[in-house]
Each structure stands twice: as C-alpha cells, then as structure tokens.
Image 1 (cartoon, rainbow, N blue to C red):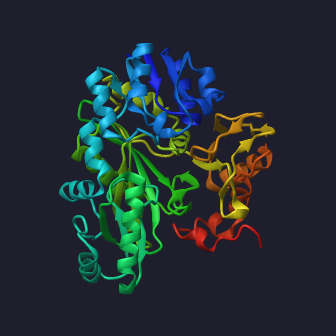
Image 2 (cartoon, rainbow, N blue to C red; image 1 turned 30 degrees about the horizontal axis):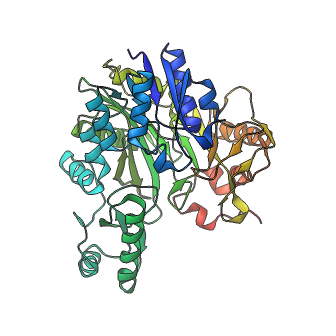
Length: 446
C-alpha cells in the first residue's frame, strides 16, 4: 500500500480524498494556488505545497510544478481527483516516468477513451450500442452537409476532445450547417486545443444514464449500477440520483452488461463511468467514458455502502476487486450547490461567505471545502458543496432532501439552493418524468 499520496486537485474533491487516505493510514500532500491558501483541503492534509498563482495553467494544470511538489515531499502516488489533469494522458505518462503511481487508468486507456472517435470505434468492436454518426472527423462544411443528409436531421456536432458541453451544436436544418460547424470548431479549439469535430444523430428528449464501473489489474471488471443524470443545464449536470426512476430490471441488466463490455474492451483499470443516452423506448447508446472519479460518485457510495475513493486506491495498489456487481439497496440523490445566481441565468457568484450552516441528520451528507468567512475565488469551477441524501424510497428521499435544503444556509453569495428547492416541488420531477431537456421549460419563478 502507498505511504504518501499527493492530491493534484483542490476544493471538496481534494478534501474527500484526504479523508479516505487518513482512514487508510496513508499520509497526504495537498497542493494549492495562492487563491486557495485558506481552503480546508490545505488545512487538513499532512503536508501542503503552494504550486503557483491563481491561474490554473500556472498551478493546478502545471505538470512541472506538481511533479516538483512530488519530489519535495517524496510522495509515492498521485490522486488526480476530477477535472484539471485527471484525464490527461501526458500527465499519467509523466507519473509513470517518475516512478510515481497515477491513481487511475494507464495513459493508453485515457487516450483511447479521451478521443471520442477512438472511443466510439472501440465500443463498436466490443458490441456496445452507439449512436449513428460520421464514423470519423468531419473534414469541412461540405463534408458535414453530406453526413447530415445521410444520417437525417436533427444531428449534433461534437468536439472529439474534451467534454462538458464545449464544442457542441445541434443542427436542425441544412442552412445552419456552415455557421454551426464553424462555431463548434472554434469553441473546441479554444477549450481543448483541438478543433476536431464529429457528427452524430441527435437523440431527441433522451435520458442521460451512466453506469459506474471498476476494473482491477487482474482483468476483472464489475459495475456498481446506474446514476440518473438527466437534470442538466447546457450539458452540465446539476442533480443526480440512483436508482434511475426510468430504470427497470431488464434495462439495468442490459446496460450493466454493456458497461462491463466497454470496460473489458480496454482492460480497464480503476474507477470509471460509462455514459449512455437512453431514448423513450429504452434503447440505449454509448456516449462517452469518463476515466476518473465523478463529481456525483457519493450517490453510488450511498446506495451500495461502498467507498469509491478507497476502491480507487486499492486497485492502484494492485489489490483485486471482489468480482461481483453491486445494485442499489435504497435511494440517493445529490444536489450540486454552486456559487451561481439561478435567478440571473446561473451567473457565477464569487465572494466571501458571511454565514454557513450545513444540514445534518440521518441520511444526510454534505461534501464541501467552504465555511463562514471563506472567500470563493473567481478562477475555478463554481461548485462549493454537494448535498447528498439517502432514504428507503425515492419519495422519502425527496422529502428528506427538501428538509435538508431548508436547513442549508449560505449567506454573502448567491447559490443554486433556491433552484433545487423548486426542483423538489416540481410535479413532473416528482413523478420521475423528465429528460435532458427538462430545464428548457423549467421556471424558477411562477
């Protein structure tokens, strides 16, 4: 087992990893930018190293500075968290060259799944259903026009690198192709340094359902069941739950088998997520694979009573997994509490928190790195807390979440708490009748 793990990340996920490491008797190293010197992950790590100024490219995305911190502290492993360098094959390769264990998949696995075209081709060979599409990169607008005509409208243009909704455009009519193709390329280039675009059939009103998988170094891959992630804005998730209210036993078995096929196709090592689009007729299609821990991993932890960070660390240390699939034994939900103003188009709201009270009680969990007096910097993702509730049934879970949201006090900044309160009251949501377009018609104020 590792003696010392450096967490190459910040905020709540860094603190989350530190907690598990302490429970496993492993020493921890936090890295931080000058903007994060007062963050709780810095305070609770055994050691902390400042790696640069607030700008991500000069701190959390700087491989040389992170590796210098590794050398200074003699860490023997790196946990990348999510975001930043978590799915960067070059970073994983540098770790390998330095003789430091990257807690995650190999550089080759990251590269295979990081490029959407390669990932799709791999899934086709593995027998996993995929959305009909271009089968490769689009050469130019004329090529895009031909592909769109063959597939049939609507279609969606997607960046082959990256994710999070960047470099994506839905095309409904032929006259939109040239303009949207150009915009998608420019956004992809700006976001990922790669302007490669591919095209897929646009599945109307789908649900976004993902399967958590774990693979070890001994060829075993299992699934830990599904998470419903359809409540999202601009392809960014705001709320997740497990089990999915749309799921039945037959669909879960089919999707679980497909997720395992996907993992075995690349001999996957580590914790990962296979993301699917599911249409109203319960046809499902592979969308992408995330080769890292997910923001929403606590949802799965709560329904199967399993520490996924511990599982990541054990797999990285060469310990075999149990070899069995896991299924939900209760219901769990996660509300992402962002420093954003839901009444003003979710505009970011950095600033100082003047008052902070997190809810408590049976079945209530809050993952956060903030506190009263903490100043939220404007340089990073706006996530400040994750509120997770679990209960025997979905209806019980909604009631518990409502109670917990009422107890959650964050003053001095705007947050998404009012949005989540309204969501819990929505009749369609309560019935489980929603898809990825749900928020297009959702009104925060009547």
